[in-house]
Image (cartoon, rainbow, N blue to C red; front, side, top):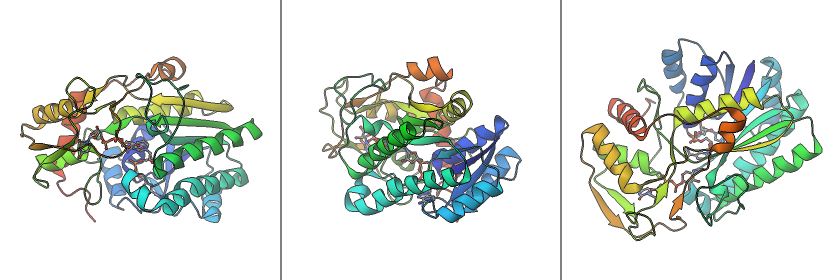
Length: 337
Ligand code: NAD
Ligand code: WQD
């Protein structure tokens, strides 16, 4: 089976390619390198022992997509490509709607032309907005508070309408909670450009000496220690979730929606403590004001994915922090140029 992996050079996509190969599925990476480096291919080669096909291109380039799908006899698409920084999306909404919404529409149009009708889409827990309660099941109401979140919600709605009109298609919406960690080899990991927006890469950069201290955004939430609670999931568990979706429902027509989370909530201070244990470094932090748009707590009910996909996250907080530390300490400046 040949799978086109858009955004396959990025954080989650590259880890998923490793698990695809493990499952004897051939990934063909399609990425414009907007937020990733070409050296990811040599790291993938090192870890898997295999040469992966990589096409440098933009998902808004329909012709290139169609010819790539034909050339490689693509059976299904896993669609990671997109922009993902919440704060930046507020400053650059057009770029976000163009890349994320328009890009997905062009991709689906290209799939239609190439005769490929199985799609897995990277959605996000952000589509639940500020949930009225936790844990969150897939039938919770959706809403968005920023252009990034709205772009994910719009794509979900477009794909839902498209699938209704094209009932022979299989479309799977995977709503990720908070992906962290890295491949256990320490050769692949998350490599944010500039100041990290997300907690885990920021903590890792404090530990390695690239940042002085962590700002903890608020300690007055209605949570056990006052700091925000999230469902952190190991990126390799997330990668396995894609293989499960592809093999269990990728050839079953319909619209399928799954939460990919662990079902456990951890606070910012829990994560700091876990990281200190994993790294043996102490993490300096200061309590700062709440970050605009943040919610108090968010974690998944992952029962549907377990029941229907036979998938469940198995890696512990200790593995998430140990693997992050191995990647960060052995690659303090991320991937080479
Ligand atoms: P990432 O930025 O590391 O990877 C995305 C990849 O897509 C990059 O390699 C980038 O170069 C590529 N890309 C961007 N626009 C493109 C375009 N127009 N054409 C071709 N390639 C393009 O991000 P990630 O963390 O791996 O996230 C992957 C997907 O998962 C994204 O859609 C993101 O919104 C979604 N997601 C991420 C998180 C998270 O916290 N990391 C959580 C929920 C959902
Ligand atoms: C986690 C917790 C922060 C940084 C975001 C997106 C979401 C999804 C995942 C893509 C919160 C706190 C963080 C820092 C801190 N992405 N924090 N200091 O906000 O849950 O989700 O990434 O789809 O859409 O919104 O993740 O890692 O930014 O924050 O105190 O420097 O850490 O307040 O409680 P978040 P995060």
